[in-house]
Length: 438
Image (cartoon, rainbow, N blue to C red; front, top):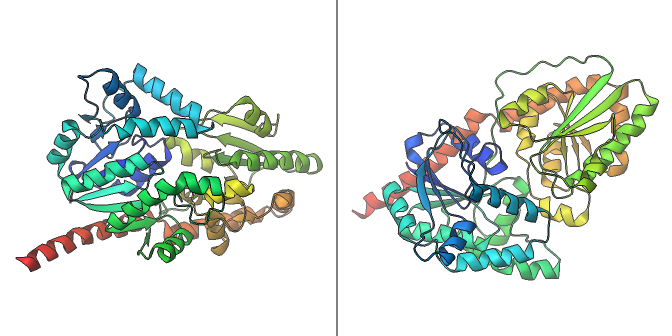
């Protein structure tokens, strides 16, 4: 079984989608997987060696230079010395700049570039014809042009499509008229890809039920896996309680962290047991956000942390943190999402403190399984911190409960075996159908 994995970003263990792909495909034979993506940045993982890259800047260059054909097939692994060239630096700076800005203008320009169809050329065809995938495993994209690339790959290879919905790009319950208009073409593209796929995966049960009911298409759940073989023992020491957050600060999550930092400052004044908060994120923060989440002696933004240090750092804490925004608009963007960092939190053997609205899928999941100390309102953050101060044994209790949920739903070997079997069944069904027509 040969699987072509289609992602928007480069396959890097340092970004969310790359980390998830390594988690899912870690036991695959390297000769049987390849990755196509629409960036210039180099991959960074130990799972895949075979790549095809085409990017916005390559398309732009092909419009300026008549003889330049975008798209490149290359072999790459971690034994290579990473190449940081001018193109990659420009690309990274552009995406970082637009990440928290008005995205409408860059999206319009991006769509114009890809509508030229310069990506549809001999470079891509030769790569696809050489690899000959049986399955295309693709994330569900929020950009229409990536869906069009998926449709072309499907048509060229006749491979079966497996679509993974890691975020809610359909926005089925969106009540904002302006957003509805902007999302109209996106929604049509996603639904076409859903119907094209032999198998659709959702990241939460809420997403699965909602998509099935709205689209009449069967969906399956796909969780991230973790190492749940040996529980990391935890001993409460001294009067300090270190809280650690590792993850995205987008979608208003920084606002919740800011509220937590202020709550910590208040409870620390009156109690012997003191909390501190360390914040790690790969995203550069503007000064305004930084000033809101940092309080001297209380909370500190530590910047990016390498993926191979995440669990070690979590184990050096007393409490691991997951947060969501309480803002209505931002909640609408994350209501069906599930941060993959939650699985890392559960596998750390430390108590998970989750702050967010109980109607969000990630918070609902932790509440349903009683796997975390859950703060459901901004005004109750202080009360929960005081509870932890007054009853420190609760940290041992919820560390074990979180671990139990991890063993039940997120054990890596179980997740991969189920996933591989489901992919294998797709190929068996194809072969059985072919044999029955002979």
